[in-house]
Structure formats: structure tokens, C-alpha cells
Length: 257
Image 1: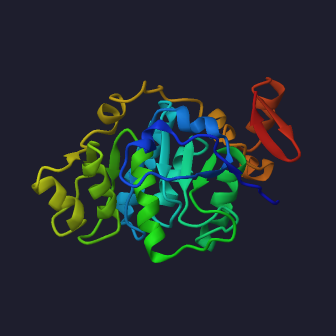
Image 2: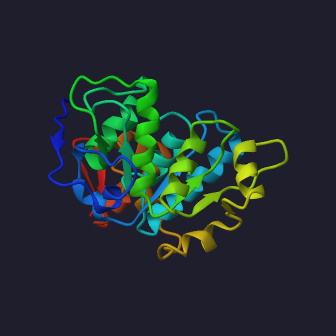
Image 3: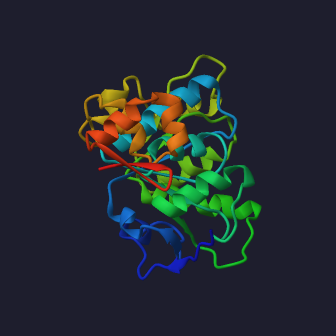
């Protein structure tokens, strides 16, 4: 499937007052996402299992509370945040939108193009360069109401995002880690530049209304999975839900009514 990017008619207000605001932005997807309540999540490309688990829970919980998650489309924490917030997610890319980079995220980015929002300040045929990842980060941070760094080593790229957040006067939050792990975020806590997230529900409730536990079949089907995936997880209950009018099946995909 070919995707065609468009130029935003106006730069979002949240980006107009940052240092070096983008002159142009190109997008694929639903540009109205930029008017939603947004939180930025970033972190290492090689997260620990602990970080994977709580990044996923955090992104999923925020999305359920009506928050949109913006991240950089990279491997690791970025991809986990996008996947678990999906479709309430915005990817900011360091290359033009006609490239899927990194290639390992091609399916994720394709899904975001179809049902969420991807943006870039680079026109067609522009490949990522080392400096464009830093440039991208100022936009990721600029779009969010606050910044969450779920894991970062010292001198990592994620800490450049922290610099942007400090410049922009944004609150910074981190997950608590064990000693000698995630030394970048540990340093932020020590220097009182970030606040720890000790309880997910308490944190999420600051920004949106927590939705009580939902029907897991409806929750799964809200992401429009393939019929095969739905049947593999829930068996004949999928057809029971279809008969009850809760979901419908079209072109071997499942949708919530």
C-alpha cells in the first residue's frame, strides 16, 4: 500500500515557541491527533524486561484514559510505547515519510500511517542522518504536555530529549530502577530534574480518567485484528460476540461496533 504525505497547513501551537521551531511539517494519517492531549514517551533502544513491561502498561493505560502518546518511531521503548497506545499514537520520524526506518518497524509504522499519525519535517527522499534524530527529539518533546523517560543510560540520546524538556519547561517523569540500572534516569532523580512514577494509576489519573477494566475481547478487537488472531486468542467467543452485535467481521478483520 502506497502512502502519500501532505503538508500541514499550520504548525501546532505547542511547537511554535520551542527553540528552532520547524518551518514545515509533513504528515500521513489523522492530523486532528495534534489537537489532543499528548504525552511524550522516550527511552533506550535496548530496554530491560522490566522497562518493556512498564512502558507497555503506562502507554496502554494513558491511551485508555484518552491520552495520545508521541514518540520517535525507533526500536525499543519508542516501538513499545507506540504499539501499546495504538491507535492513540503519533510517530515523529527522523527521515521523510516515504521511508520506513528502521526497517524492523515497517509493520508498526504502516499501521500508524493507516490508523494514527506520523509526522516529519523532511520532504520526500530524505534519509535519516545522525543530527536528524536529535532534531526529531525536540518535536517529540515539544508536542507533549510532559516527558516520560522509562530507561536511559548516561550520555544516551534520550537525555537530549531531557535537555529539550528542561528548555521548554516541561515536567519530566521516570520509572524507578534498581541500583546500577538506567543510570541516566537515576542521575535525573538524584539531581531532582525528574519525578519518579511509583504508581501507574495515580500517575495516569493526573492527566485523564482511568477507565475500569474492560471486556478483554472488545479491547482486543478495538485494534482491528485479523480474524485468525482473534480466533486464536478467544476461539468461538468471537462468533458469539458477532451474533450479539458487539463486533463485526469484514474482509477477515474484526471491528467493534
